[in-house]
Image (cartoon, rainbow, N blue to C red; front, top):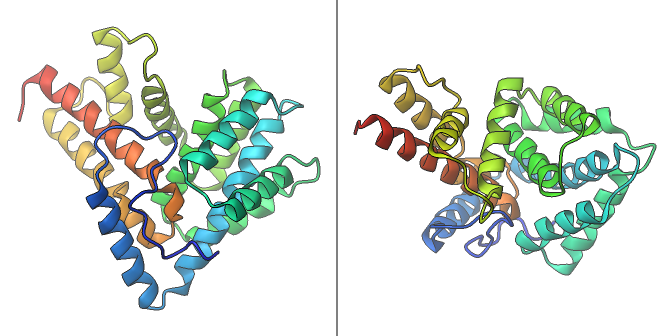
Length: 256
């Protein structure tokens, strides 16, 4: 894939909004260029497989209830558009989406291959699962079949149920957009879910959770480890939601 190693300054994910400056894109692109110059061929391999399996699993999840709806196709297209893929890249994504929804799709082997390539980088695994949640939630309600399949995907990549719930809180919080806003109590509870701590956690525990999540999902680190450049919006979305959740809790508790 020739798009690896190019500047990502303009590549903003379909679900990302807010203060995502061009400086971040320049920094991430610079790190990517430095990484590829050092000869870390494994990063390219991870990026290519990550891209392929992302759209295959997206198609597989869409088909699990028996049919792929127009909404699911629309959301998949929106994600491709938000990634600013070239025409050949869009065609590749469609081909992998189609492969994933086929009855004989090799679900388990492909996830095993991805897990092996990721080599224990759970931050990339969480980014992968987040994309699947974005697609599934964006297309409507999650039925039992889809929710169970998403859990199987997460489990095969080493993402726990608690982490899956945390990622779902992030995706739903960002997808809410202009919809009816939650009450202050609901928003606060959602913020604790995003940080993965309880309302009874100490201030220090909240701060530690915030710092850990911001480090785990730093776009620069994820791209250097193999996240495709076009999917940088996933990391940006996560850090935006984590920062928003932290600021809400900090304001409510009154600590600095």
